[in-house]
Image (cartoon, rainbow, N blue to C red; front, side, top):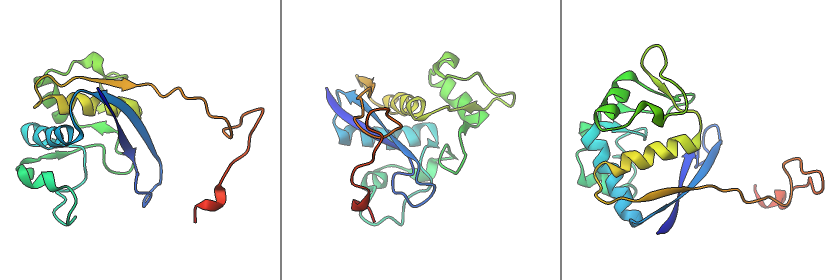
Length: 165
């Protein structure tokens, strides 16, 4: 199995600048995973990105191979947009997702809140698995201990602050 990571949040740093990385293992290649994302977007009419990406030049080349115009719902991409609309929840349930998949119960309006980056990564992996046969994956828990900073009682200092300007 190969190791990958999702960049969740503002990975480019041009907005609220908050992001996380969630690591996972998969038996598929990076390109197979990327292509499956685009296929799942078309099959479900749901996307987790903000636009059709037609103005991104050499980026997102795989989006040209699928009918992105079929996408009806764009979810979890705007500032403080942490809910799947009820229609999307219903569509995901029709594709086999169970209510116990999520950390929080459904909201009164039928929408589903997503609590954190790891929960979104699990949802993305499930989503990507829809068009892929024999797609195996596993989240990797990053419990690596940090030596400095983060209010550590022994070495609460930052290194290399001046490198970023």
